[in-house]
Image 1 (cartoon, rainbow, N blue to C red):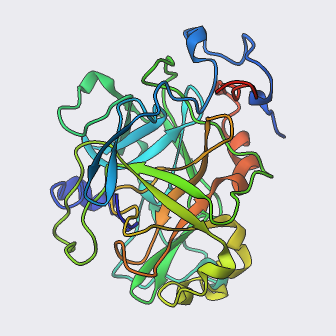
Image 2 (image 1 turned 90 degrees about the vertical axis):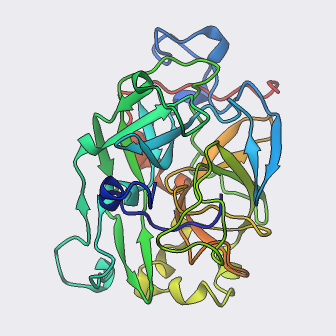
Length: 344
């Protein structure tokens, strides 16, 4: 777990050693049409893990406990973990759009909001490239019978990726992948979606988890990456946008020229105390723990400037701003309801 950087799935296939209308179903208690027929009564609520224990301290993060975040999914290319996602229904996984596309970083790419070129800056990769693993803790010895092939995926129609100086920036960086329906268990539970009016309070702590790089930008190079073999988590602080733009290392990228200034509500700025998400964590969840101890997927790991650089927050997709779009593309899924107010 460290700062966000782009990873190129096409390159991963070759160089796997280098980059490894709104139906609010969860407002009510579960009914037969809201739960998979294979779902046990023990797993009636979203965002409610069977355990909340912490693991031991590792580098700049904390090792998560097994089944602590039973909604987090490994994103695989050719059985190599390249990113992550979040299970939100029995068959839909929320991830970052940039995880599913190819773009040539060496070719100048200009944001579409300031360009008249109708061509996209990226190519959507074949769905057959991607698979997911749910309920798995480590990245080694993945059983092939647990790998779930992606059946389809949809990118947000306003997703864009482009160069800004020496960095690659994404906007509307969100996608939904569809897999075959899964059975909920103590290892597989969907996370709750945030409601459209459920903003993260300023300066609130949130949790990010993934299997990404565990070294900072002082030791990370393009051809080296120390990946965690177990699920890691870290705590980050939500920084209001107006404060985020005050950080000199990030401010040049949060501009109208980059299609961000008019759309600041669509990103979350998060900052860590010598810790952050990093390369390989992309697509994973930003988790906000609610008052009665359940989690919502407040954000998605998207982009950042380097790895764990001082005074440099990273940018995450603000999920609640895409609520209508998510619901539109997940109507065939089974949503679990939120826990009742008296549930702890």
